[in-house]
Image 1 (cartoon, rainbow, N blue to C red):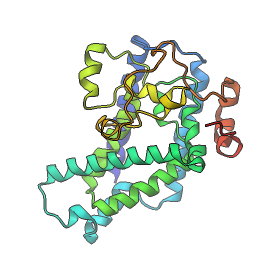
Image 2 (cartoon, rainbow, N blue to C red):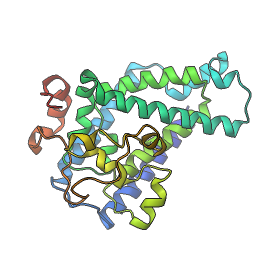
Image 3 (cartoon, rainbow, N blue to C red):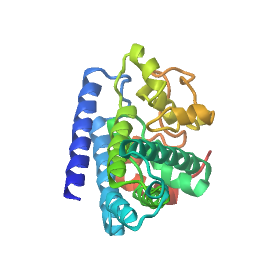
Image 4 (tube, helix red, strand yellow):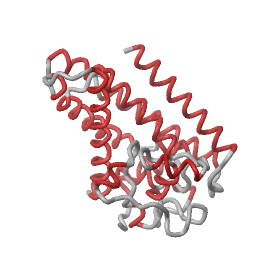
Amino acid sequence: MEREIVIRLGAYAGVFALMALLEAMAPRRRLRTPKAARWLSNISVTFLGAALVRLAFPVTAVAFAAAVEARGWGLFNNVPLPTLLETVLAVIALDLVIYVQHVVFHLRPLLWRLHMMHHADLDIDVTTGARFHPLEILLSMVVKLCFIAVLGASPAAVVAFEVILNAMAMFNHSNFALPLALDGPMRSVLVTPDMHRVHHSVIIKEMNSNYGFNLSLWDRLFRTYRPQPLKGHEAMTIGLANYREPGHLMLPHILALPFTAKLLR
C-alpha cells in the first residue's frame, strides 16, 4: 500500500509539473480569468475530494482489488490469462466504465448537479483535470469498486489504471498547444487536449460530446465524437452559460453548486 501511494503521488506530481511547464511555454489559449484564484480553488477541491474518500472508505481501490483477488471474485480471477494481457484488458475495461459513467453524469439531472462543478470552470488547464465535486468523487469510487469486483481486476491493473487516468486527465485538460502534426495521429488512439477541450464548450451539443478520458475509441464507437469546436479553439467559450461570474466560482460557491444550481440544460 505504501508503494502504491508513492507511485501514484510521484506520477501525479511529475505529470502535473510537466503539463504546467508546457502550458507556460506553449499555451493553446489565452486564459480569461486570474490563474492564482482558479488554481487555489481547483487544487483545494482536489484535496478535499481525496480526503473525503479516505474518510469514507476503509480501503483504497488497490487494497480492495487485492481482497477481490484473494477471494477469487470476478472475471479475470476465473479465466486464466497471461498477466500482461489481463492487465491490459482490465485497464481497457475500466476505461470503458469511466466513459459510460461520464455519459450518465451528463444525462441524469441529479448527477449533472454534481458534475457541473467540473464544467463551471471558466478556463481549462491542468488543474481542471482534477476539479470534481467531492460527492462525485465518492460516487465514482463506489462505481470503481463495483467494477473491480465484477472484473476481478488485479492490484497491478488498478494501480496502472489509476496512474494512467490521472495522467491523461491532466494531459487532455491542459492548456498546452500540442503540435497539430501530433494531434491528429495521437487522437486516433488517445484523447488529446484539443479533442477534450470541445467537451468543455458552453455550447450544449459540443459539451455532450468527446466524453473519453484515455482512449478516443469509445467516442468514435458510440458516435459521441466531435473533431473541432464550431468557433475554433481560441474563440470558443469555456464553461456554463448561466455561470459566468468569476467571483461566484470560487471554492465555497462551487462546493454549494449541486444544491443551488439552476439547470438550464
